Image (cartoon, rainbow, N blue to C red; front, side, top):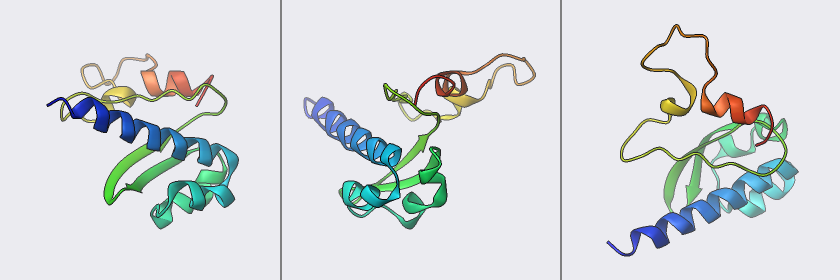
Length: 109
């Protein structure tokens, strides 16, 4: 049980390094991601937004990057929870209110 914070810290550090490489462009992306899937080198990575699986030490991590600028904000879902909670209002889908991910992406990455 005591190893979980260490594993989480390593995954976050790797994901943040990958996000930083996306901000620079596709050339350093391959070196920073070390084995990212072909989707990671797609044109959407160069334009600032990215969504896809990233290989991190033999495991796949689904990662979405939206927005531009700094600091980079990392949103994590809880125990076995869908990431849709950051983007979709599941309780009131017709309510005209901004959700967390689109709101954060307006001013930072």
